[in-house]
Amino acid sequence: MTQRNILGGFVALFAAFPSALAADCAREGLLAAAQSYLTAQSTGQLSAMKLSTSNFTYQQNNKVREISTGLLSQSYKIDLNRSTADTVACASYTMWISTTGSKPYVVGTQIRHNDNNTNEIALIDTIAATTGDLFFDASKTLGYIKAEDWTTIPEAGRPSRDTLRKAGDAYLDMWTDAKAADTIPWGTDCERVEGSQLTRPCNGQLPRGGSSKKNGMRRYVIDETVGSVDVLCQFDSLGTMPDSHEIRIVNGKVKYVHTITALRVG
Image (tube, rainbow, N blue to C red; front, side, top):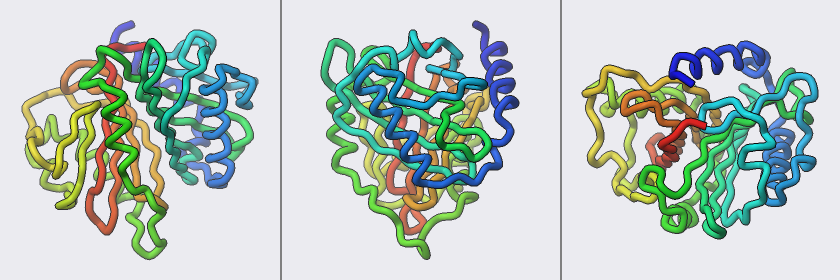
């Protein structure tokens, strides 16, 4: 499938879910649906989830495919997982890591719902990295992320949705905009985990333009309670790689950056 066809398909996909972009959903329902996804993934039983019978789509590494042929068709022992919830977009983001078995994985998944209905899942959108993908080493990644602090931020100190989205966009714009890096509120103690590579502080060795292709197909899950934004995208600046970038802001400064990058579509 060509890049144009993938992008066109994705635009059409979100046109089918207009309410998901303006919904106001219960946080508890979003996290419950995310947990049902984790149960399905750890058991290989799709019946653990309530999928929409009228309008469901499964996408893996930026390609729409049958859920029965994707990651969820098999069970994986999950060593670590974490979920965030976006009550405005009626969506959640779940990261999970599996280090055992013949094929380890680091996975980022956005789940979306229609019409404020968190009882049914309309879209499962997954970026999955495994052996051979960019800087991949699931055990190293697990060690870094297990040590992180994702405590809920007190309400008075939470970053706004606009701040979080701008940080996510500015990060992805660094490859095409020489000034983008300077607009990001870097923390002096921030950590960046790219695959299995750790950079501290996370604003070391940043790109400053050079590519003419902006990273596209961006879709967002923003959770102010933990100060996070996850952006799934197609990394067009360096190719057409499926990619997830997650950023956490604490006390007004970037604390963590995580990337999951697959080298193949589908």
